[in-house]
Length: 212
Image (cartoon, rainbow, N blue to C red; front, side, top):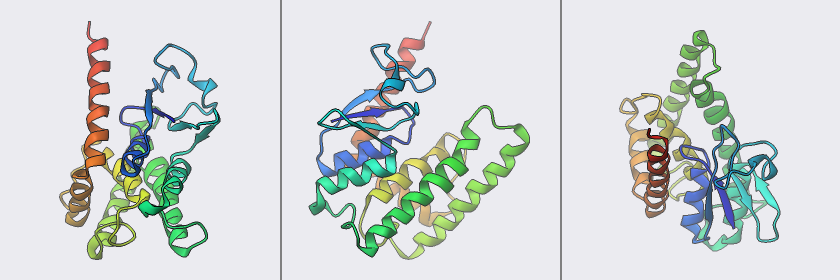
């Protein structure tokens, strides 16, 4: 299967999950601002929404939306326990987290800080919203190693990916020791180290190609 990916994108979470599961994913790096694939073709033909991630399935169909793709991959390897069985309350807890991360942390939290079109007078408000969510996460993690207890799940891959955007926004997580320890704990996983190393290689390639 092919994963359409972006440097510093939320698609990193899908790459991490694929590596956790041992599901091989061919990474296709997308120039999202220009909607171009490495061969110069139109990414809109893959995903009409123009966003990553997108997953090309073995039968040639495409699946989009990271929260859904991660559940799909985890269901390929149910023995991994990265996502509880469909229909269980534990599964709905994971879905609850995936929804919160995608809406409150990603779209409603960090994206207004990332987008150049965000009005300057709204940026302090957006930043405060992010800080309040990080504070709440820190409190939630006071009594557990991972979001839903003692086991790493797809929700943790998702949360880690988005919260690590603090590095690009100059947000110091030191005031929240539980959250900081959580990020460090996940950052030491082999899947995360490998996924971030490949992302870093692509970032270096892009930088080299952009040099005059």
